[in-house]
Length: 137
Image (cartoon, rainbow, N blue to C red; front, side, top):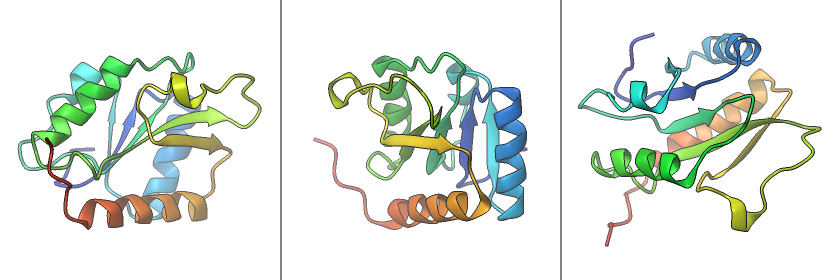
């Protein structure tokens, strides 16, 4: 799907999660884009960037540098404090990072997902990006 001005980005989700997430996003009529790598998505169109990023990966290893690159790219477009970055995970995951180990994402999106949960999350992220950005020092 071509990236519109504002959209949800699914980054590197495993195939089964990609199928479920795209189906749910279609169900709630939410524009989205899918990228398999950070470098692929750093080519965001000049007019906007995602207001919600869902990080998916079977190894769940997202570095602080990768997350900072997202935030820097968003800041260049005026979205620094409004972008929500979540890590997709299983409810039975044995080891979630502690707050000290958090590479900079805003929280976890715990499977299984429903259309109602995803719609609420998308709506919250959308409202957050409508608020004025806090100036970057």
